[in-house]
Length: 280
Image 1 (cartoon, one colour):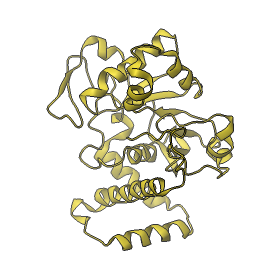
Image 2 (cartoon, helix red, strand yellow):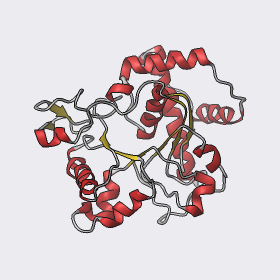
Image 3 (cartoon, one colour):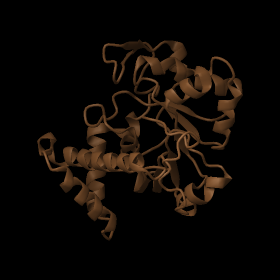
Image 4 (tube, one colour):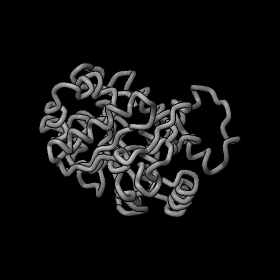
């Protein structure tokens, strides 16, 4: 869940961004193969063969296979139950229960009444709720692409790690946002864990208008307090913005490489079609 600050790095179209795109795309294909064909499907292949597949993928003509898309959506729902298990809710994480962290598996969090109050009653989204979704990363690869209008035309836009969407970028990346992820490391490194001034971070979130925020509070023990402070901060500013926390069990047994791919899989269950720009 790394964060690429566009003000700190100018390698927007460099090797790091391209490598990240390739890893995420390959990981997503690997996940699909695991779900459809079983874990024994994975086999060793040459690196040159992987890059050749990626090049062919970029130039091939695309047409949606509705039957295969529905089969994959059904398989994904069966294995991961994304529509009802992506976020912690009062329904799937009762008060008094114990939640095991995703990475720090020896760490267990007791769900106190105070923590329980922060959870929504149920998942805010349902299966196949939207016709078209867009998943946007934060690495800078679609700068100068002029994709903004196409992105904003989606019914649901999912952005990763509070990427910039100001006027100087909107022509390329759009501005519409329904859900945005925040890596707690960003809050720790750039905003001193919200232990001092909180308004600079609040002002950044205001750029996303009424979009909801989702954080990996239960990825490891270090993330929990920082993630909770985001919820407390927005309550202090009387913001109506929704704050959600990823459930640590979602996709845990299937895919741990790329959180962006988890977001894509979530949208597969939420939308009839999903369009991905892996790096923004």
